[in-house]
Image (tube, rainbow, N blue to C red; front, side, top):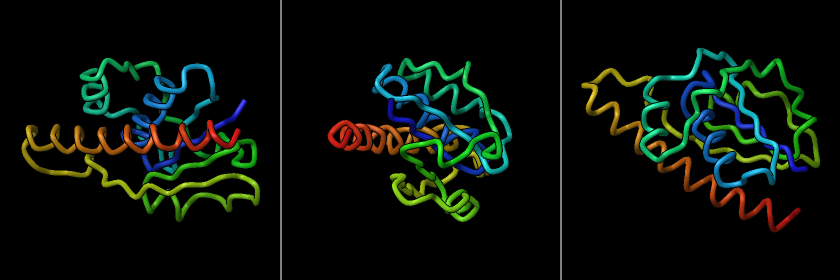
Length: 140
């Protein structure tokens, strides 16, 4: 079974959304995990905006990248520049992707603007996941 790892800094928003969408769209076709270089827990806004599209990520955990061995995965996706720069060297033969998405959790604006930023990132993650799963299905 193809194993995918999504990595961002806090493993609180982008990688959690990616894990949720990948699990939803791939069903049992792939083994999906996510991790953070400095995990801080799943962000409540991420839970909220994923629930808006009927995907429950409340059982997902915010795990440190150090709990995983990158070479155990078939595909590694970094979702921010910081994670890409902190990620161990990805061995030859492991597919890698980089999606430099903004971190909506870093915003310090009104809550209505924050939720809109989370929705925008959610949409970007969903589109990227759909494209990735098509690519991985075609190559496996």
